[in-house]
Image (cartoon, rainbow, N blue to C red; front, side, top):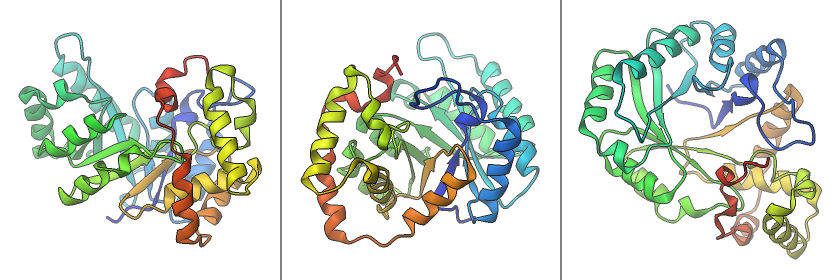
Length: 294
């Protein structure tokens, strides 16, 4: 199956997520189902979830049923400090199959995979056996760093990577994307709007993220754009990379979904896309794992 360029992220269907002025932003179940069904009608056939995203898997399962024309990526976590509990991991995978109403999961992604996990032969054999038994179709990883992405690609048993890639975090485009294409590893990207930070909400960032705010506003002014156009630029940048198979992005309502589709279909000059490279920030502050205060 050829997956759509948009992968609908569903974390906010099951729990609070993102940067907003009000804390309770979990989408109501009935609204989430409407968004999923509308996404299908608009040509989106790829969805991203995880067993630890609250009720997200169950909502997806209810909305999509056993629709074989939909591709669902879910995740499993492996404890990096304690001994690996394989029966518990299998239990989590089977729970996902039940929630999603799927006998076979399209892809299971190892969440926050690192060198220790990817170099463990027992973990490798465990997932390959599940693949052989038709319990899972593909094996992927979700990672944060360039190093972890490269290890995933070079492992020889990982079929896809999911990495952060956005206007202020462009590091994966240096080595990772080219290597993934060479090794035939599919690329999923996330954080196109960085939890909503790369929108007009950048004006409300807390003091600890002042570097992001200052640098981004400075570059907007440099290119003669306003803060109201930041979302447009961020989406155009994220969706312009042809090496990427699909971009994981969440929405709060159907109008936002339609807006995103409209923006990514808008033609943009190569000259502008090249100019957007100036938004990249080298500081680690662009990593949302460092934002417990949001």
